[in-house]
Length: 251
Image (cartoon, rainbow, N blue to C red; front, side, top):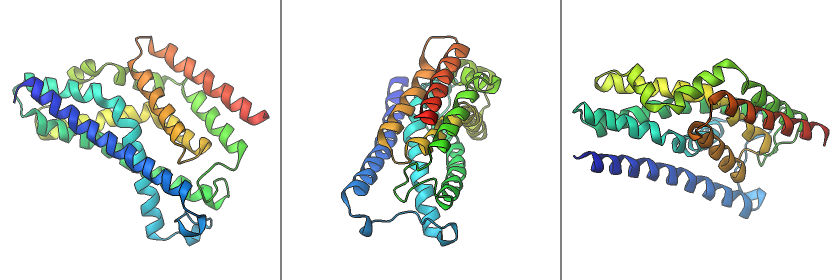
C-alpha cells in the first residue's frame, strides 16, 4: 500500500472513530433533554445505591468522551507514526492501529478514575441527577487546580512531547508490534500528563455539556498545534482558568 493510500486509510479510520464518538454524545445529550426525567436512566444519588450497570454506563460515557475529545489532537502524531513505519518498510497500518489502541488505553484507564470521582460527587450532592454541577466552590476549585497545573514543569514537559511528533518518535522509536504498543502507551501517558486537569473541568461545567466538551477539545488542539513557545501557551491558558475560577467564586 502506497504512503498516500496508507495515510488516507489511517486518517479515515481515526475520523470515523471521532465522528462515531461525537455522534453518540450528541445522541445521549438529545435523549437527556427530550425525555421526561421519570423515564430516563440517571446515576443514583446515594453511593451505596450504585449497581454494576450504573458504573458501567458512567464509565462507557466517559470512555466515549475521552475518545471524542482526545483523538482529534492525536492525529498529527498518528500520521507521523504511520509515515515513519512506511519509511522503515514496516506493515504500517497494523502497527499504527496498535499505537492508537495503546494511546486510547491510557484514556480508558483514566475514564475509570473519572467514573469513581463522579460516583463520589453524586454521593456528596456536588452533581445533580442530570450530572450538572451544584457546587460553585467545587467548580472554582477545579478551575484553580487546572489553572495552577498549567504553570507546573510537568505540564510544559508533556506538552513539548505532544507538540513535536517527529521528535518524540525519533527519540522513543521501537521496532515491531510491542514497540508500537509501547510508544502508544508513552504518548498516551504524555498526553494524559498534559491534559488530565483540563478533563476535570467537565465536572465544573456539567458532565454532558456539549459546548464544554467542544471548547476543551479545541483548547487541547490549539495547545498542541500553535506555533508558540510551550511555556507561553501553558501560562496563558493557566491565567484564563484562574480568572474563570475567581469569577465563579465571587459571582
